[in-house]
Image (cartoon, rainbow, N blue to C red; front, side, top):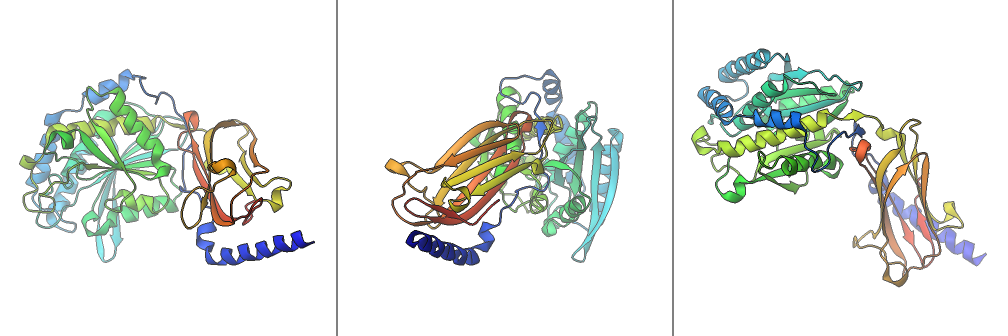
Length: 441
């Protein structure tokens, strides 16, 4: 009876803590539209001759000419006559490449403008969409050669080359206005995509990718992406490894930053990847942001890397839906006679889920792993093919002291399920022999 009284006292403590940390305990999915994929050939040292051909078609002279033309329009801020003229030029370029082109008018915060969307329809059975984007407006005093003529020129070059090939998923080349005012054009585009339930597989953003002033900066690209977008970064990394002769770049990985149009998608749960030059152009947002300050050889490599990444993303065939995977967590009381049960349920009746599962039990305040028997670390990682249901069970562990803990369970897909990402976490209390958690059933 005394033991039961102690258990119920601990439950009261946990419920109290739950009231304090409600925001943290909510389980969540990182992405509204995470993808699940038949990842055909995206493993290292697996050369694709079609992609090799496309990468080699990326030409420095073509990129340079695009930037020269963009620069000649002069400063072209949103709302100006110059951006209207540039819009018509860019629209005509996409039309000449044989793409499906649409001008999309937007209004936001007393500003208005047009986004330009050019599409290559996918040939696969899925409805996936891959977006590669840049912004075509500049600040009011700048001709915008690098910011963001570099991104626009890359996308024009990619669109012309990629228009001659077929892909499983639809590719959309999107140029936004209103970026310099606060991501206005992309805000409205992403909102509409979200409301329309567009199945956006992933978004790549190019903004300021044409400046390098040293060997290091000329061979390094910054890549901003959160954990749910690991699969996109992995494709980019594979491109740098398998096509190094043409894409001689190292990728420096950073967490997501709110510094360009990709963030409009990120805020709505889409998976994003943003490329930025390694050394920021010192002429950025000045009247001297011109072609002569840029490194076209570097920009050409970035363009090739972007093309390869989009190609890999568009070859993905969706098989397993993220909502077909469920995480189940039970603490001591709900998992008697065990201390902890973490279950993974696959509701897909056709495909088995190829996933990695990471279970972490940490002190809520110090973020250090809870120590188990003989100073063992409460961190477990598994690689599994889940046909129906898989369960991890913990029993008879002894802990040194009572601790307020957080339990994180993270699932990531691989092989044909690349892009699956789901995370759930809760808080609770560890005593000498019990793990009491806010129930997750």
